Length: 564
Image (cartoon, rainbow, N blue to C red; front, side, top):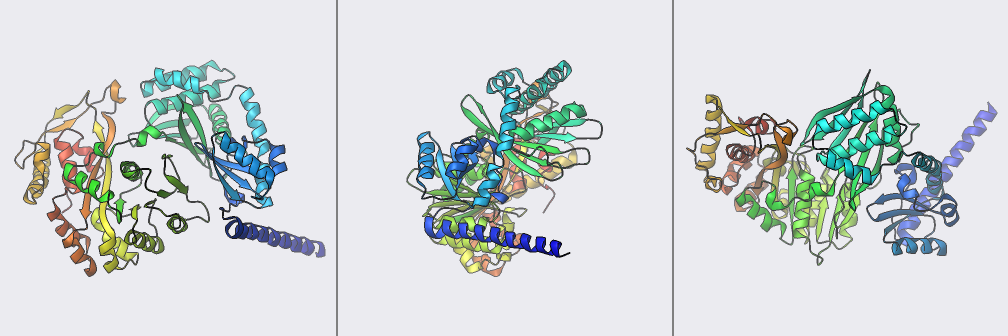
């Protein structure tokens, strides 16, 4: 018993010492050296980053690279004043890296150095031929034109029983997903087989099925290159790896969660080309485009985008940033996580201990002109975002509401003073994504009487409000034509190819300003905003249906066309 008691006391003393060490490192980082602090016990350490320096040298100069993002190298250091440390950071800069250094405790560095055991195993595996080859990916990308091609090539590889079949199978899966412009790859363990699915245009499609043995090898390979621990199978892990194709970096954000029959793995494909969408080509109707173009170029104001997860909000925010970017202004983003690197823009990522609120406060000390906050989740963040918009900053962010009219009540619910909100809020935008009909196999279909009645009712409402139907060659009495697409090889037999946005927006004009202090309901806001001449989501959806861009069923899946 006394021995157990002594052991408990020793453990508590060691815990206190560890806490004191972390606290000291944090204080020194901010007060003496003016650099960020990092606790590597709560941070993902990328194997790819550790390869910047060998273990012996890292221990000698007391540094630990823990994250690489493009050419950004994030380095934890024990002593910023050490000559060897400075020399190492300068050498990285000469090699073309953008070095971001962090103060860390010795215990943090020890945790990172302990990961070098996994690096050794990873290097051994590559010598065994399990590397992801960019050249092979390029070759496969040219061969794969449909999901059937992915399935055919994958089945050939698994049937060959080659010693390198796992690596080749992963190459086929990745090349296929990139070639078909998918956003995610899902590897899902089931009782007797494993299902591989691609998310294409927002919808999951089965691609192939694997035997349990092939799944376990593929699972290990993905975890290895993503910097995840092979031995951990009972809790979630997050990692990342990159592929370079024709000198272009495509990042793969990897997530694992334990399941009944094995881990479920999802790889998010972060292809920079997928966000290179020009604001003018996003499906924004002409009047709204002119309003957005004018509002985002103003020197201050709050612009909020609403919509569910996966509705394209991040792409729209990035399009705003790229539209107004010039070297003369300072732009800072706070994201969760940073998915795409934007040249000339300072991007930061939320971490444990660094929330959107912390990031926004820190960003305001960086002399910014434009701030993008990934999401407003709480009253404090909302309050600072509004104050920032009043003090000479343009602030872009997202908010969880069902429509544009819900932004004002939600901000008031987050304790934003309505009188201040009048001056801060410039524009509220809501959006959804719909798939576009395949132009190759699109055909006209019969129109049911109830469908025609519904569409004419919405058209009449838009016409009565003086909205610009003529911009789409439509009138209230225009013939109702609906389209469908049976599917063809060009669209992977889905009937759809690509996606576009359905939008609505409310400009904070004089009439809206008058009702904000009265804490208006969504219905009151909609009634006043209807006079602005901007399509609501119902009307924008119907215009795109009648223009043959998408189908009635697709719009109905994201917008309630029967809502009054």
